[in-house]
Image (cartoon, rainbow, N blue to C red; front, side):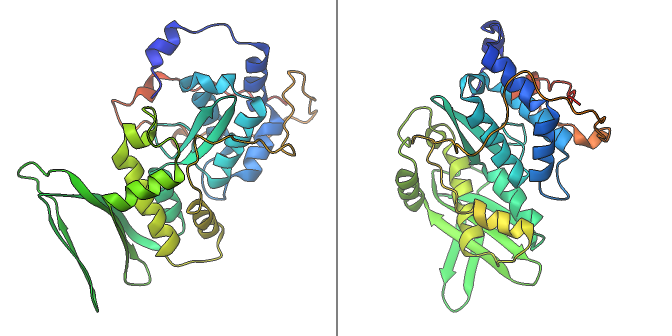
Length: 297
C-alpha cells in the first residue's frame, strides 16, 4: 500500500514527462476519449478524470511509468466504468517497471455484476473451521452457512459467492482454499512475493476469485453492454509480474503544447454526487485531494 505521509515528505519537483502526463489528463482530447469510453448511465467524464488525477497523487510511482502505458490503463479502466486506485477499490493500476498493469478488484467485479440488472442480491464469504457449513450437490443443492460469531471462527478452508437471480433461482460457486491457492499459483507468478496482494490480503483476492468464477461460469449471459463487459472482465487474469506491452497503436499526444479548440467546451457542472466520498474513515486515500480540473479548450 502507498504510504501517503512518507510520499509527501519525499516529494520532488515533477519532471517534464510527469508534467506532460498530468497536462494530458486535463486536455479536451483526453476528456473526449474518456467520455466516449465510459459505459452509459455511470460515471461522468469529469468525475473520472478527477479520479485519474487522484490516482497519480496517491500512487506516485505511476508518474515514473511510460505515459502511454498510464494513459492506456486509464482508458481500460474507463471502458469498464471503474474508478482507478480510489477508496472504492474497484480497479487497481499497478506500476510494473516502466509500465502499468490494470486489474479489476473484487468490488469492481461486484459492480459490473450489479450493473447487468440480472441480480436481486450478491453475497460472498469465507468458511472457517468453527462455522456451521452444509454444501451438498445432490439432486437439489443444499447450502447453509452460519458464521461462528460467539467465538473464534478458526482458519478459513473454503470461499464462496452466491447470487439471487431476478428471473428466479440462485447461482452459487464454492471453492476450497486449496483450489484457490492452485488458481493463484497458476495465474500469478508473483504469488510468493512479499508485496503480492495474495500475501498482503489473501481474503480479498480469494473473494475476487470466487466472484469472478461465479460470473464466468454460473450467471446467465446477455448481449447488453453491461453483460458483455462483465463477461469480458470475468476472463481477465492477474499476470501482474509479467512483462507488460503497450499497444503501439494507442496514442494520446503527451506534448505540453496541445492544439487549441476554438469552441468553448460544453461541460456540465459537476453535481455533489459526482465527487468521491470515501466509504472507510480510516482509508489512507482520504489524505489525497483530487485536483481541480480545468479542461483545456
